Image (tube, rainbow, N blue to C red; front, side):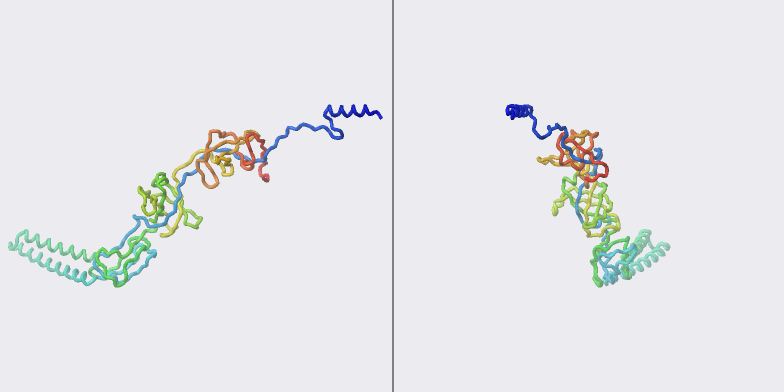
Length: 351
């Protein structure tokens, strides 16, 4: 066997880089890529809001305290605390007290005497037995006696009277009981208009500075998903020492919430403008800085952004590097780095 020929062939194979029994490797330019979905980048705005919790209560303008018009005795009570009453409904009966009855009797007697004196003075004046001043004094005394008796009649001093609701109302508090002797001006019960309820909440001073009277609000009872519309009717200008918060009152539509009910309110205090993007488009780097990924053709481009506001599953962002003509990457964005290739998923394709 020619050993020199075999050794020469082996050396030739090593020198040329060939491998016996295997094909030569072929160069490849295929780079890794990520399957993604895209969405357009749109400018827009989201509502800027302030949220707070509070309790539904009657507004100051919608309350009325019913007081005893004179010294009287409570004869009967027709309502109870928490009851809704119609306008004109009977609330309670008042019976004149002995003192009031005596004052009424005296007023009637005084009017009768004053009338007789005025009549007699008129006759004497006609006979030139009384002066014009005497006649004027007698007539004034009769007029004063009539006015005094009319006032006592208006107060119910002449007979038992029934106090009635001046408007459709909710009885907040009842201070009277049958048989109680009450003096003039004694509070008997408190009424509130159901259409004048407000949600009394508290916000921080920084939040209060953003709130203006008349701004729209959305109210929901705690534990209830249904929301109703309201408006800010008052924003306080000082801090409540009990809570450390600034009081805010929001008008509540009639028939939706009850006095004493706890509710949450979201007040719209303005708009935040920028690019409105889905929450899924927003990422955070290792330093905690937010960023998004845009598609620059078939290449990924990471863009630092600022988050200006949020509502639901949407965010408002801005950033000097954002390009409105380049779509945002949604699914698959967390796998991307600058310059990586993208493969866009077909519409409706499984991710």
